[in-house]
Image 1: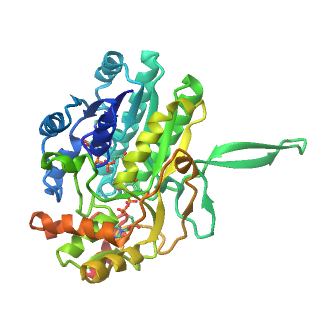
Image 2 (image 1 turned 180 degrees about the vertical axis):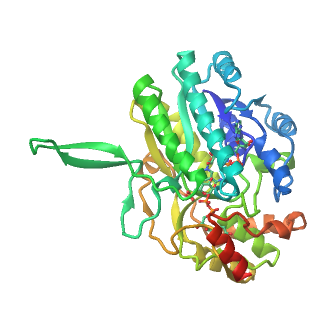
Image 3 (image 1 turned 135 degrees about the vertical axis):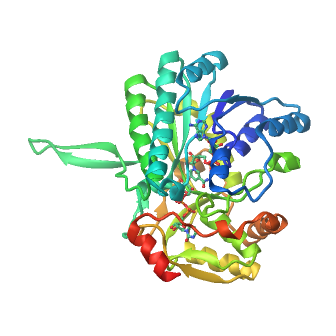
Length: 397
Ligand code: NAD
Ligand code: USQ
């Protein structure tokens, strides 16, 4: 298949592009490189020494003999170029990773909130409008988030995207239909993913675009079979207070003897998936695109759920670190339940990697290898959801 990977220079996009190329697909990476610019803005860098995108694809050509084309383009702003690219490259599928994906970054300031909304919603809408303009049948695979569902305090198994509701008409006769699961986003970033869902619903119904929305959990890990093939292919690893996700942060913190930053009591339960499973799911989604019709196909892309406090304990025990309960910068429930259906990806053949000590030890080794690159100043999260949270954190310090 011919596949465009929007956001193919990022943490999930890069290993996905390599994997799809390795199994024989014809891949083009499209990226504005905004993520690298945000590193400069924040004064942080990936734990792992990532190479330029040009060096990355050159290295891939050397080790695999396969070509990955690169197009530098801002999906949110370069609409005419996007249409021209879709016409010229005639893709069978477009994988859309190209969004600002950090909840703390999206809550830093009014400017960051506005950037996140503009970038994410314009990007998604430009892609959909551009596909309609080309008149081509292109399957869109979008990386959404488990966070659109919100977090329950009652025991339910979260369905894959839809709730079937029954309601009476004016004659008392019952009807039923599928509606999008009510969203309860926990940050401006998560809000953009909730709004993306409506854009998808509209364009699927109105224009017949085939769309798969992958509601992905928190991705952990770094390397994949492909990124391990050459040091120049190494994947990004964020650990800072804005872009670092919880388990990867704990692994880095433990490896440098920094007390693990559990927000509040750590009673938050979240969904997780290893990066190697994430790229397999994306491949399964792309290769099963012919199954998609005018109802957006939603698949929950996660393999297990864990409480934050339990993860911290596990990592601290393995690496010998300590755990600290820090004031939570986020407005979120201290405790929640989370159980998730993921039948669709299992049905397509996903064989989940379970979080275990061996895998965690391998990640701790990676963190230790690059420990001298860690800037401890950038570990605390200093993006607050509300002024009350900011004041509480200052009092706590
Ligand atoms: P990332 O920030 O590492 O990568 C995103 C890439 O998209 C970057 O290379 C960036 O430069 C590019 N990009 C952003 N806006 C763009 C634009 N307007 N035009 C062109 N390129 C643009 O993020 P990631 O961790 O790889 O996440 C990829 C996607 O997966 C995101 O949509 C995110 O919401 C979703 N996701 C990520 C996780 C996770 O734990 N990392 C979990 C669930 C869902
Ligand atoms: N947390 C800590 N300590 C930390 C960092 C986070 O206790 O040092 C807590 C947070 O308060 C939160 C939980 O861990 O309760 C998860 O935080 P996270 O930063 O790992 O995940 P989140 O902000 O939800 O965002 C990440 C990705 C995002 C993706 C989402 C999937 O950045 O792109 O959409 O995971 S999900 O969480 O399933 O919505």
